[in-house]
Length: 238
Image (cartoon, rainbow, N blue to C red; front, side, top):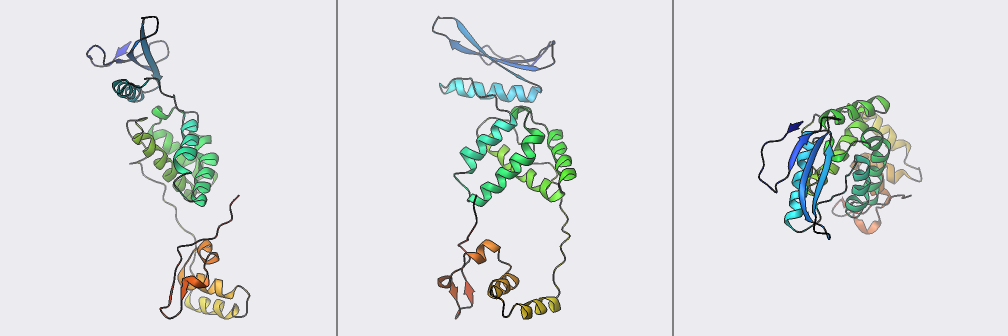
């Protein structure tokens, strides 16, 4: 049995169990109703994960909270993060994009791993999986969503570091070819009498998003100053 460094009584301990190689964190958590001492314990596949669990348990005990915390898996934490942290603070379309990335890519690739045990190699494997199945662009998006979720887990004291924060992110390469000046002029001429001609013209000349142009109303257009206000969007929500 491999043990952690010597600790003072009451600080808890971390050791590696011989039977299965798991790292075990233990901490005395006071006395039960029967007067007997209670002991909190958590298992992790890494020493770092066990130490993170022990630090969290000690913090909870120091402020009078129960040391038992939910043993989050990545799937459980990502779902909790979406509903409790993301949904109340972002636009509906942003939440929809995050939810899609979590459901389609992050949970299938990382969902069974304990939150405290997530390692850099797990994230790199997710990069490869998503790049192979979809594209580097989607892998880049998945990494950014994961990094945000782990940042909130770090702030909540559930992990000791954000393993996605310093990893190299998949770099997508755009295959889009912009219009030439002649092509743009031909497009403007072709849509002169089109019912949606003003929308396409505004899109070409301003680079505004579709939702911004669909939500644009006359009270947000100043022809004298040649300005438009794009602070309002129109989106289709499920």
